[in-house]
Image (cartoon, rainbow, N blue to C red; front, side):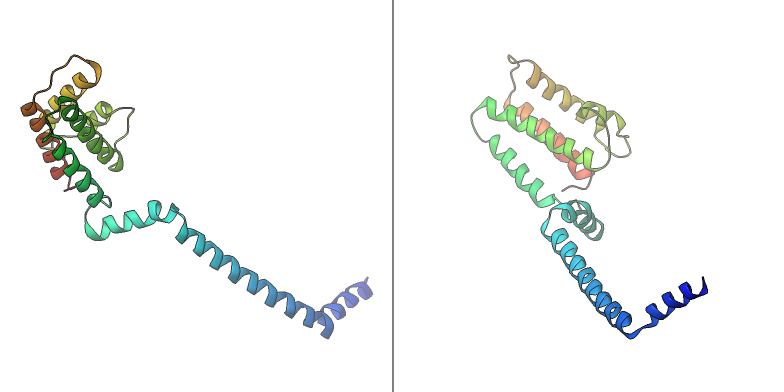
Length: 173
């Protein structure tokens, strides 16, 4: 039995084995380095890091939502829809405005199946015009569920003002 262990010890300590082991270590280090580089490359190229890490980092460092520029651009498009002489465009602007606010609530961590469920979780301290947002939401629901609902330009402007104030209170603009 001691011969067996002695043979194993001699084999492990032999120059040939040590040389082969050194080559295997070098190859392993090179492979590990290549895998690390590949992982970093794919994380950089993929959208995973952007959505999971980069957006949060930008929000923390700038104290603003990552998508502020995109939201501001969308909002300008909604305001331009109110300049058109089409009630359908005004209705679409109201629906899209609530959608922007809903996305903001979702990013803030409010859960629920619908905008209404998420809005129920918002406290008056978080949103100063909470009652106005509820009224605007009712108008939006009328637009969506009642095809005969008539929306005036003044109503559409008022709803957009309410949603804009809510977004400002939440720090989006």
